Image (cartoon, rainbow, N blue to C red; front, side):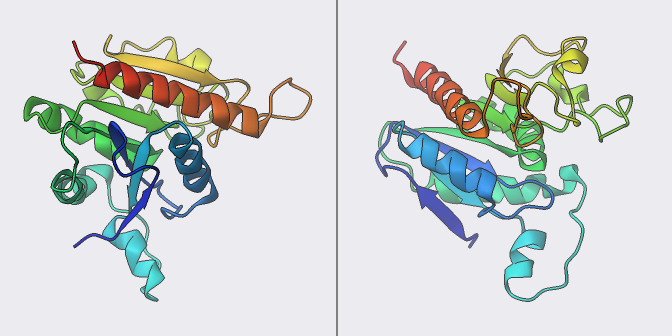
Length: 217
């Protein structure tokens, strides 16, 4: 069994699964903050860790993360576990921070076709490694069928607004831009934005996206 960390109201109409980034645990300050903001917007969140990260909690050797593609089965298993406990009529979204969101995006269309999820949320998607904008991680995003929201800092070194707006991506992907935000949505001083404000706005965007997907059609 995968250890899960739940927050927010159990019977919220929408539950979102959030996997961590490459170097941060499911209790990272970023994910703690996002989960708290979502709970205040009646969105339930379930966080989990891939095995390489969970091993660190038990004194395991600190290993680098496997390639994103190799983590897809673990994410699939987590969806099975969370999905079994969903309330009647509760919608499930998948996603995560940085690498976690990337792994979710690789699995999203499979789960959508199977009727397991309603959408995808990526918080700081790693479009390319910092300083290497030609090494794109977007091949599967051109034809993505899953409704998706990407919350991205305008100056994220893993993909800035100027860089991303030149890409050819699926029309199913919408963006929320964090003003002057970095990879954790934090702005520089004197730019008219705050970290708290950017996180609040990001949670508003996720809640609006989730509510629209859950609305009866």
